[in-house]
Amino acid sequence: MNARPHEDRRGELTEASARIDTWMDRVRTMAGHFSVRTKILGIVLALIALLGLGITWQVRTAMIAVIANELDNHGQAQISEIAERVSDPLSRNDTDRVSEILDETVAYRPDIMYAYVAGPDGNIVAATFSEDDVPPGVASIEDPGVARSVQHVDTDGEQGSVHSFSARVGGGDIGVAWLGLSEARLSRAVDGITLQLLMTTLFLGVVGIAAATLLTWLLTRPILDLVDTTDRVARGDLSARAYVWAEDEIGSLANSFNRMVGELESNRATIAENDLARSRLLKQIIGAQEDERKRIARELHDTVGQALTSIMLGASLIVRSEASPEATADAERVRDIAAETLEQVRQLSRELRPSVLDDLGLAAALDRYVADFQVLYPEIETEVHCNLPVRLPPAVETTLYRIVQEGMTNVARHSGARALSVLVVSRDGCVRTIIEDDGIGFDPVAVRRNGQSVGIHGMVERSELLGGRLDIESGEDGTTVYVEVPVPAPVEVNE
Image 1 (spheres, rainbow, N blue to C red):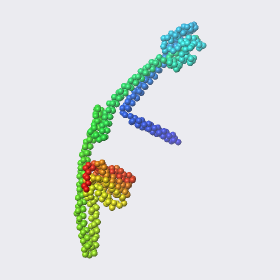
Image 2 (image 1 turned 120 degrees about the horizontal axis):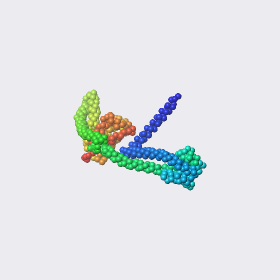
Image 3 (image 1 turned 180 degrees about the vertical axis):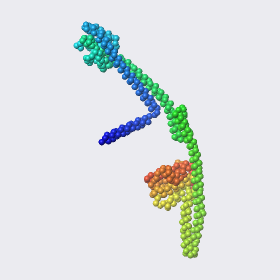
Image 4 (image 1 turned 120 degrees about the vertical axis):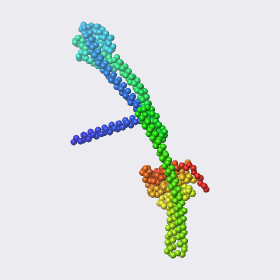
C-alpha cells in the first residue's frame, strides 16, 4: 500500500534531476559561446563585485547596529540626567528654569532632536519646540509606562529615524521628561563610509579589469598563436611552427605540437615519395599490360587468325573437290568451326587491344565497342556521344577507353539497367566522360572501402595517374560515373 508514495517520490526526484541536468546543459552551452578572455574578465569582475558588496553590506550592517546601541545608551543616560535636573525646578513649578535646562541640553548635544517635560496630567510644561513646530514623532509617543523606556519612531523627514526616551520626574508624581535622538548625523557618517567602500570596490574593479586584461593577454596570446598555426597546418602548410612564449604548460603544448607537425611533415614527405614510386610502378605496369595486350592481340590476329583462315580455305577446297559425301560433310563442319573460332579470336583481339584505337582514335574505338556491346547485351539500350575535335594523347585515349570499357561491363553484370549512355567531351583543356545508367545502384563509398570492386579501384587509379579524378554518384534511380582528365598536349587529327 505504501508503494505508490515511494514511486511518486522517485518520479519527482527523477524529474528534478532531469531539470537540473537541462539547466546545467544550458549554462554550459551559454558559457561555450564566450571566449576565454571574456570568461576570465567576467569571473574577476564577479568576484570583486561579490567581495566588495558583501564586505560593504557587512560593515554597514555592523555600524548601524553599533549606532543604534550607542544611541540607546546615550539616550538613556541623557534622559536620566534631564529628569534629575528638572526635578527640583518642576516641583517648585519653575517652568522657566525647566526650559533653560532643556535648552542647555539641546545646545550641547547635536544629536538631540527635541526634549520636553509633561506634567502629571500629560500637558507639556516646557519644551525645546513651539506648538507650531512640533518635531516628527512627538505626536505619536504614547504613555511611557515605565521609566526610561525606549521607542523608535520612523519618520519621512530629513532627520530619519528618531529614538525616543522617557523618564519619570520625581517618581512620576510631578511629571515625565521626554527626549528624542536623531540618527541623521551618524547615518550620514555611515553613508560616507559606505560610499568610500563602494568607491574602493570600483577602484579595485578597475584594477582587476586591468590585471585580468593583462593576464588574459599573457594567457590567450600563445593560445591564439597556436590556433593560427593549427589553421595553417589544417590548410596543408606543414612548415608552420608555433612560437614558444614561455616554458610553462602552454609552452609544453606548443613544443609537443611542433614535434607533431614535424613528424607529419616527415611522414608526408615519405608518403609523397612512396606515392610517386607507386605511381611510376603502376604506370609502368599499366603500360606493360597494354603493350602485352597489344602484342597478344597482334599475335591472335596475325598468327592464329591466319592459321584459322588457312584451315577454312583447306576445308573449302575439300568441299569443292570430288570427295566422298562423308568427307565433304566433315570438311564443312571443320570450316564452320574454324569460322566461328576465327570470329571469337577477332572479338578477343579487339577486347585485348582494338586496333581502331591506335588507327582512328577514341571516338571510333568507342563506337566499335558499343556496337559489339549491343550484340552481347541486346536488352540494354546503349548510346555513345563523342565530341573530340582533335586526337588525344595515346595515354589519355587508352585510359578513357579502359574506364568506359570497365564501366559498361559493370553495368551489364551488376546493375540490371535497361538504358546506358556514354558522353565524352573535350572542354577547357580537359576531357570529361560521363557514364550513366538506370540500374539499381549501389554504395560507392562502402564498395571502395571494403575493396569489393577491383574494377572501380582500377578506374580510379587510371584517372589519377593522369592527374585526373573520378567520382561516382549512385542511388535507386541509377548510377553516374564522372571522369575528368587533363589534356596537356593534344594532337590534331591527320586527314
